[in-house]
Length: 209
Image (cartoon, rainbow, N blue to C red):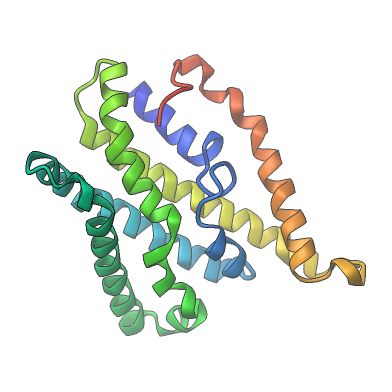
């Protein structure tokens, strides 16, 4: 249980995919203007991350057994693309307002490096992680890590949506308005997450996934 707690802390805080690993920056900057769209995008990303890991993990095992590991990235992208299409269909039918609000950023989940990154890192690192810490439930680790990465993405999106709402009411110099102040605010939020670095020291898992 302590291992899973450590994975959650790392995925959400100390190794946040957006603020620490700088993956998924495109939707982070593009869909974080409003809280409802930020949450909607994050929930879609969490769903795709977890389901993609659940599907790709056994597929990768088959690829390795048949000496087809070189097809890993292509297969993973195809799986993620299929899952994103499923999310699109569901949102278009049941939540059309959110579907319209997300716009082009919804299909861009297919090429969101955070989604592909968590799947690849799970496959490549979980086995090593399990061996290093003498545990045998690699698939469970992969799923928890995917959930943690998705929740970390949600946290980053919600926090930055709040920051951007404050920026709209602030008196910003004309030369910094728009993208410049957005990037400055994003960098400050990223730096603030460095303060969580010591949370996992007690778990002895600083070199984990």
